[in-house]
Image (tube, rainbow, N blue to C red):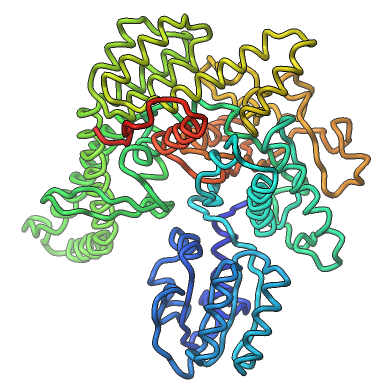
Length: 622
């Protein structure tokens, strides 16, 4: 069985809901007669939301569920299952609940390992309030990540890119963020029960995360009963997976560009969050939809361009109408069909028709849902000329530039302020050398549209730094690096990434190309300088020459520090489907960001450095 993160995390949550007892495989429930209450904090609510529905909670004996910070009344003779992050405020709230005897017994589940000082606070607090007997169990669940699809997860660490690239951030703050990312990745690996071989580029946050994760895994593997005992490893082969860690600066353009495929469009334009979406219905009211692996249309067509999706909706609607006509014809009671011996045949037809009704109803609901979503998208595409943005950005990346009149036409045409700002940044990234007079023209056009140029100025500064570094000879290079580190703090990783990926000019993303090479495991100039960490090997052996680097790898986990998106996820899934025999890639990131939100983080960095006209509001508004 391949690594299925969604299934693994769901299994762990179901076990937790059943008071951490094994769940019977036949009925799928344990202790059905035990009614329980579920208490969670907001972060854990986001973990549960894409995986467990209300009907599933009922199935596992959860009759009531509440947020931790809501006022709650006592419910006697009922056990409570708590699912919380291990924070001081959460622990104090648990102590308060126990001292007030809100529930009969408390089954505490922490989303990651609870630090010893907090555990001691919990013990002291419950002893002092004479309520320690109410605490039945305390479990570390290692579930501190949000799984959105079988092969897609997020650590839900907000504004990570800003925090890591903030010029005013001190070492301590950077270490805390890296520690948090490593904690989340450790939870993912513990849930999958795999110890991967780790690869990453040199320098920057990717190396910091890889190095600390390697150390954390090494320390954990020293324990006799660790989370990675071989028995828990159900990978599709005996071979371990490879974990490839990258930093957002590795390929900045993907986080900013407009994309015209269905999943990225729905995420970017309509605000898909935790697999849920709100769009205007036909009669003006808001309709809420779930888009996950239970929706066959979403799963099959998410990677198609929008026009192809519209055609597919039409095709499915025609097929549905044809099937309904067929059912009506069979059950229409035509007299000729009911003569003599044909009665048995007709009864059979009638039974088949009745049995097909639930399936037809479900199909119609899916078609209606995607018709509504496509209609909402079409409205936005027309209002904002999103098709034009996507096409011209793609052309710029391939051709390495754009005609001046075309550029100004876009900046003065339709689209929100954010659309125009994203387009201007894509022009900056895709064009290798731009005369300063051209940049001034772009900045003037942005200001005329009342766009805050902080993000544009920030990327301009980073690009200038890249060019200085690339052209400097070795003697002066170290001075530039020193200067860059002083000025940009962690942004030095953007410099070491070089211009190669910033100016990626082929159709395949640099990330996908690199992951493909890393999974191949053959010598390749693009990845020969990448670091190797093997937490299972003695420290001295962990290097590129190790025998464990002999590929190809069948399974990979790709992690993007600083924000990921559905474009990269889709590109990696296309890569594995193209290959024979098929490979398996899980994609994860610190947070999944639409282009506009990522550009807002760039703007924040620009403002922190005193760049741009920050008094204007960029906002995704018009």
